[in-house]
Image 1 (cartoon, rainbow, N blue to C red):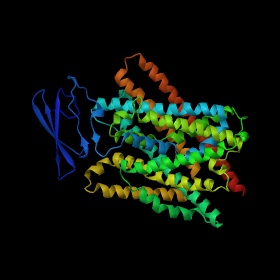
Image 2 (image 1 turned 45 degrees about the vertical axis):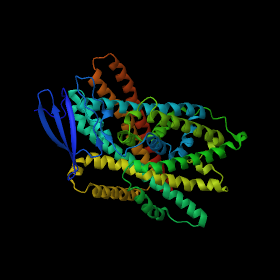
Image 3 (image 1 turned 135 degrees about the vertical axis):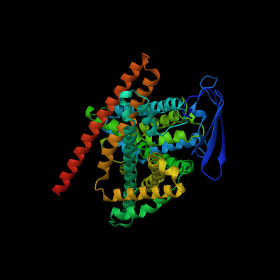
Image 4 (image 1 turned 30 degrees about the vertical axis):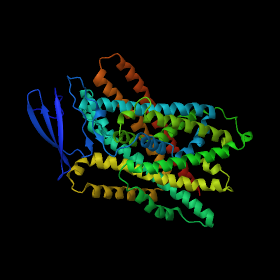
Amino acid sequence: MITISERLDSINTNYNSNNNQNKMEITVDVSKNGTFINYNTSLPKSYEFASTSNKSGDKIYDPYDYGKIKNSMSFWGSVFHIYFMSAGVTLLNIPFIFISVGYVNGFLLMFLIIYFYAYNIHTLLSSEYELCKLKGVPNLSYSEIVYQAFKNGPSQIQWFASYGRFISHIVFLCVWFGRGCYGFFLVSQIIQTIYNNLFHQNIEINIFLYIMFLPVYLISMIRKLNYLVPSSLVGSLIHSFIFIVILYYALTDPSSWHFENKFGPMQNIPLFIGTVLFNLNITGIIVPLKNEMKNPKKFNCKYGVLSLSYTLIAFLFSVFSLVCSLRYGTNLRSSVIKNLPSDHFLAQLIPMLAAITMTFQSPLMVYIIVDVIWNNILKETKKKTSHPILWESLLRTAIIVLGFIITYLLPNISIFLSFSGTICTSIDSLIFPATIEILVFWKTNKHNCEFKRVLFKNFLRILLAVILMITGITDCYNEFFSSNTKARST
């Protein structure tokens, strides 16, 4: 019996939309033996099939020609999403860790780290492209990339494919639940500070968590990525305004700059690398963004979305951190906002703008969590239900409520975020992309001498990830121990 997934000599594909069901009837004409196969699938009606492809003819299957979605993401919409999520309000915390390694070390390391992260994403997407050509599908989710890489790897490790997919799900949920809860907490904390300073009161933060629940819930119910482009655009503009204002205050008095702290202790470098990588880590949204682009070929090409986005981010991170470090030196506080003059109206406006931009990030974080649960873990349930939008809305509600409960109950959410973020960032942004490239290269070029170079290169990437995990876990343990000691002594 000939199946759809087999490589056929010639395939002519036609489809007719079925108005009564969310399915398409695909008729496959196998010209090798004249056999017709009728196959019903649950592909969305928004998919457009590209021209035919075959193994022996002139045209080779190219995943970029297939699975195109109407109402998809534009080139600049994707750039705004990446910039908005990477260069978020958490960038305001980077100068504090930047000065700990010295401004010369920090400036050079910042470019190297961002290039290294972008390179990891590039190899992940390149591996996905090879797997899509191998399997004859237009695109894969992150968890399916992990699954297919192990499934098509050496027979001795194919048993790990399902476990790898499960681990990728758990890692993404931990990262984005953690970031969402932390963002929820920071927004409430900022509004609490503004309110208490303005009205000279001492209202607990829990009250502001209740207040922020409704706006976060409403904006997080937006389902489509392309509908979130306006909020990402506005958020990016507000981000840029915040950074310009902070740079303005930092550049007003160059005579007070601190040039003495050029090189910091070497033992601070692993923590610096881990912190920057954690703030950069948006792997969970990279693959869906590429899959929903109008022209996905422009995402990972030489002058594509990925290159442009991370060039801008590298410039912003490096210059912003350098200027703040030179201006405030060792007086830098955990968030550079706290170094701004408290008697200036413009400086007082910055925390409120930061709270607004963090609120705008909520739907993107919820989108990633929903994509993992609804489109991967519960994909079979999604196919069977007759009311997918209703169930997805209920799932979004459950996610937001659970995030609120976690934020409300955890006494020190920053330690929880650092712990889960250190482990999960190392896994989903370093270990998995390196392992996937090894397995894909083994499948396609295992007899090539280039394989040894790829193996050695990715072994170093995995080794760095393990070092970052150990360093991060140790720092989190020390911070947790010291905070408990202080609590018992008071």
